[in-house]
Length: 427
Ligand code: CTP
Image: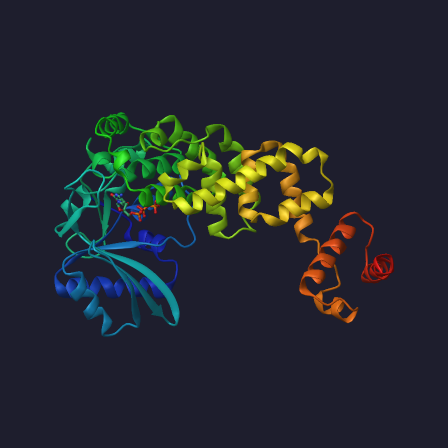
């Protein structure tokens, strides 16, 4: 147990004055109820790294608060004088709560200090309320098993029961015990994220725990939903900048193989590049599709990532069609190419750019330029010009777009001029 500069820590956790006041309220309530409230995990780890100059301060670090006590009653009592909304209550004795402090929303994860019992390999644990020691002992890595007390009896004190401080100093990702990844194989992915994000190394024990996990084939038993979720965190939590390192590290540790997921390693660099390029433009759902489609060795591998059979079959037939297109692309006119591209959703096209690297330029020209070019005349204008059926109008708009792309029309007047000639020709 070590003292910390408590004010400084609270400044790190709570940027706003209202948040600090809010924490003080929590502290007083814990005191009144005789329950121990503390910070653990990410926020403590990041604060200590920040103090060592190894991490930039984060602007809005969300935080978890752990209570050694009865969280339901604690939150009920808190309710009496605070405007709040419980967003989510989990089976693991945790609550996500949104407070309104002076109208500003603040989301906090409240966690009951707990013990975990893993009855089956790679399945979620049963949890039981317990004391802070059990709560630190149930965690993934020593660097995450550090706590700072917010209320008595350890107010303003750093609790380091498992030598987390030493490992933080040595930049090591070390599991608490060798069965850790058998119990919860998602910790392997978490460990990889810490290593890459923080620039740490794996400890000897990390490799040993991995070995035990592989022997027991625990990764194979991890559900598709949980596996996909961990991989999504690489992209959505860690981001495109370090994605390649994360995927490479995962590959080198043979995690994909052990998880029963065949990946196309040679795709990784291009996949990451493509994901960077569409980051701003694509929705998360679209980016996820590109990511998973571009990652697997063959589309059947998508099953391990939770894709339905129907969806896989649909994508397979699309890919087969696209192969036909790919083989004759050099013989096709711009119009014919556009016809192909227009038929395929952009997230699939983007994934095809990874699967057929030779087509990357062409596909991206379509995504970034061609698909955005629109005629100035719209459907209404065309109706006024005498075009009737929706199908006809659709065709005309496509022709106008093509003429624009070919540089044959540049303005609205050009478009009208072109159409007049076009009508005469077709009469
Ligand atoms: N934890 C764990 N095993 C898991 C998931 C979480 O032991 N499979 C523990 C870790 O101690 C972790 C804490 O729960 O510190 C909170 O988890 P999470 O919010 O996912 O991570 P953070 O520690 O906040 O770290 P970060 O978000 O920065 O990755």
